[in-house]
Structures are given as structure tokens and as C-alpha cells.
Image 1 (tube, helix red, strand yellow):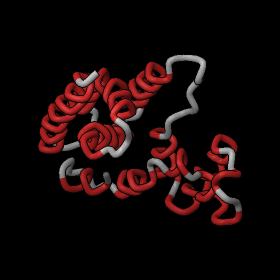
Image 2: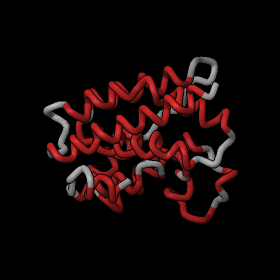
Image 3: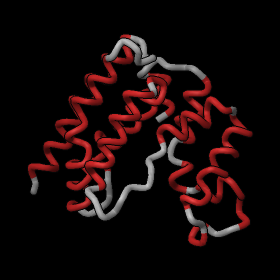
Length: 177
């Protein structure tokens, strides 16, 4: 993800690259990030340790990096509702409010969509992901091409083409239903 941001997006701001490298850490391993190896992952309450994980990032890499990681970290969604709708609402709000976070979210989104054909999960799970991402493709394109998105024009062109491929991948897996 970070290499795509540098090589294809043309973005080299250090705090954005650092945040890209750390983008999933607060969701996936907050206890490890905050406390190291003292507590096994299966005993760690992710939500409880997210603030400490973000503080660790701030201490090690700076507030600007921690803020970006916080912005791209998915909240805990209400499982009694439609989590895919909640995810889409979260992404739209994030993209609207945080132009620098768009860079990371766009790279992650492209990676997730274009990588569907490399996903080793069962077909039904891949189809769920395709249905989750597909409705966001045009929204992602609009934010990618927005004037206040801090990506040079050649990077925006790359994103535009990548979103075309992402859409094709999603359509393919959705069509297998």
C-alpha cells in the first residue's frame, strides 16, 4: 500500500507514508501495538486498547501520523444493523472530512478490490466483499479526482484506471451469484 502511494500516486509526505504502513494496526493488533508481547492477542479487547495504540503511534511517529491512522481506522459497527451500509457511510464521511486520509483509504480500497482475485477465502466471502466495495467505486473516484485531494494529476490518473479495474473485479464476483 505505501509503495503504491509513493510509486503510483506520487505522494511522498512522510506522515502519510507512515500512516499507510500502520493503517490497519489499530484495528488488527491494538494490544500488541500498545503493550508489546505482554498480553496474547486473544485476551485483548480491541476497542479498549485502541486509544493506547494510537498514543503509541503518536509517541513513536508523531501526532500527524496518529491522527491519520485514527481517521482511517474503521469504527466498531453495530452488528444489529447493516454493517456494509455503516461501512459505506463511514468511508464517505471520512473522505469528505479528511483529504489526506483519502490517500490512504484510496490505496487500501484499490488493494482490496483489485486483490479480490487473489483472495483465498471461500467464494461467498469474496462475493460479500465485492458487494461491499462495488457501491463505493464512483464515490471513491469523485474524491480521488477532487481538487483538494493531495495527489498529483498523474496519481489521480492511475487511481482512475485502477478504479475501473476494481469495478470490473467486483462486477465479476457479483455476477457469480
